[in-house]
Length: 328
Image (tube, rainbow, N blue to C red):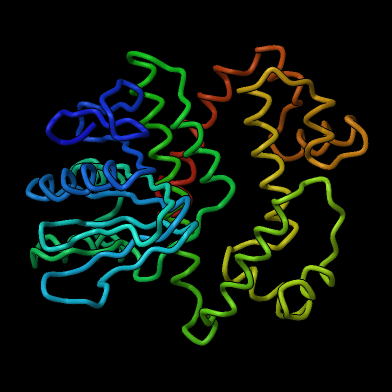
């Protein structure tokens, strides 16, 4: 829903598929140039109210330009995200024919309720408000992890209605905020000398694509490194710098999040999920699933965990916020 009250669908047409909270929080999705133009125009108008916008580039590339400048003030590549303070000075443009972008808008009071005033990312946005200039939460864009992808997919396909719909949206926004803050803190702790060059980062994105293109493949670090033109040492070091986890840690997270989503959303057996995620035996998959989530996959299929998962995810948000900021 735009700030003017218009609801924009996945194709930019009127619908009730996407939803918003009364507290000034909304979700919008674009996969066409017409919908992107409509959404960004609405975001620019909303800047008068100092709204902040999470932006997730699932596909394509987006640049932001200031008046009279041909050089982009902000750039977003595929699988990147950040939090933006947009005003009428910043013009966002899709730079690729195909794209998929999600925007989550929050008014200033919503964000300030969860971020300490002294947090450097929040101060970046506050400085933009004080100077009436566009601003970003993180000077370097953050990366979309499997966990973030899973949350965004859940938002796009949410079956909830009424009050549960609003609560579900807010809980997922807070989950995303926790993940963004965690990534920001990790990036901030890395010294400039450890930041990756553009070509090194591109190789790490290629590794991610190889890992997830076929979850049944058996692949080694040596073969991965060879396919992208590097060695094992650089692969392990650069992947951890780029994405905050190990190569196989990322792969396991991707498999588990994808498996959980399939079990919740699809009419599929545990044996089928096990096969699709590369496990030879369903018992091995169930054991790995329980180790990762703390419960067996058959408890999802039996319907016993749907409400419990929702509540646990919501509680975990606040526990993670306390851990990050040292509250309590």
